Length: 316
Image: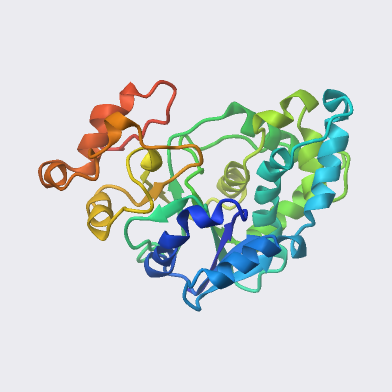
């Protein structure tokens, strides 16, 4: 099965992990990786030296940012009270809409979306052996607001799977995504013509800035209700705290090999920095010889107040 990978990213974020993006080409069983962003992203991709398998797609050729931004400003006009709306507020929703709208220009049966702050630790096969079904990679995360919105945009849709579809990536069935977009656009109870207009108009004004929509939870739930046989479910483990223990400039192949025994991927989220008491911990060869990455993370992650907790299905 051939498919392309989309990485929606900003020009500000691209340089942070550009030295590691070769691993996308090496570890994802895809035909080509496309970075989706503005023209500055295109220039950075061209100058990065990444092999010829990578390309760039102008985000405005999928959905114009300014169109989404204008609607956001209208929805938040009362709260803004004449102030300008930061582009980042729109950007959080916009990057999700790009991943969805791409289905309408994709010529393949599937395409994958992959988070730009995440790097695979080992080779990722997205197709289940035997059945030939693509995988939904599941994690443990819950945000009630996502499901409030999806129940409005697709009446009758609800959370039906105990785990979360949010896993830093997703292999999307082009036909099913196009079907879902048409269903959303056919909902005459919500103002707007295009799917993204209806999504934004479905979110209460005072909730828009609280991240009240997830493309992954919406698409995953849509498949679970209307196309339950289309995907196989699989447990997925990513080291979400990667940026607090590893420097993307110095992480080594040895580190990735060690991490890859327990983790599928590692994330370097914006704002993460290596604290003084985190230095020479996970990237210490002596510790790596004696302990697994899972053992080390399980021993410390409860110390992080309010942080995401990685859970293994075999844990009693």
